[in-house]
Length: 400
Image (cartoon, rainbow, N blue to C red; front, side, top):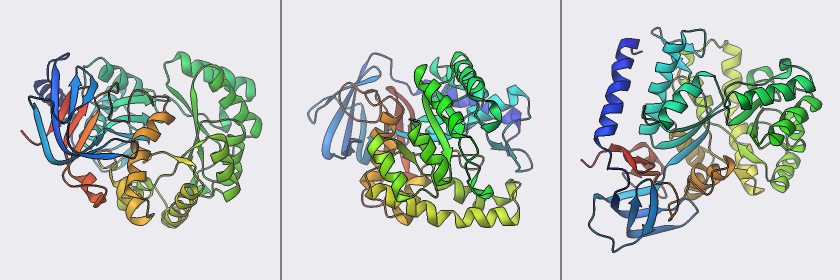
């Protein structure tokens, strides 16, 4: 693991290199592409994207002169990860940390995780969530740090957070603290069985107050009972959903509830098992959780549930978020276009940003990622990111 002095230098260098490659804001930039996937299920060939400042202003095959030549690559909207934990990292002994450290240390590790996530092609993430996310989010928004657009819950709400009145007050406080979203745990974790932990009244109070103050609510729900209670309470999305029944999936489709199944997190825990304090029994449960996650993803797709793209990235997964594409397509047999739409326009819609990001079209933010190869025919192309632009600013350009 990098020592903190190295991380300080790393973050400063990353910011300097990113700034050095930025086109002047407000200038017109023309990008030539061979294959363009627009984020809404359509693709086109041999065209050019025209960017003015931070926005896409035209898709014009005749636009000239060309400023960036991405011909031979595939360009998609910048990818969106709707479920990460930005502050989780490995310490010098390769042991996972997610708190109990100096705030300045946590901020540096979070800034590093933000940078490597952006380099992986993810221009927007939702961190669910720790209070340190706020400092990193705000400095990225101010242009002082390079990183993806961050939305954060700042904290997590559980059955121990109080009764209905206390939960409503906590939601209001979380909004006042600057949160973009509310995160609640309706059930226990996979290793504990996923049974409902928050009462129906607690879930209704939390999601209802979130809606009243203009915030979305995303719900950790492994088992069916907690998920169904959250759907009935009008919560925005169900995270994980390992053991959802067809009846609950149908209810989600009817109510427009988003679904965020996660495969990378399970593989990441197993791949880095020495870095986490899991018992042998818990690791076995995690491994057994892969098959039902694949199954529920396939059943949800068949029932037209709105499936979004989250990884639950923790220590060891930041900068590898794109592996979720591979697991979904290779193992769950998702259509590559469906997986790409989940990570672009559908996730943007779930974040309330469907008119701003997630689509390559005039009027949208110029968030772009180019890969070597075509993920529609070879999903592993997502591992070969060559070019990243966020808001008209270039943060990676392997064509230089």
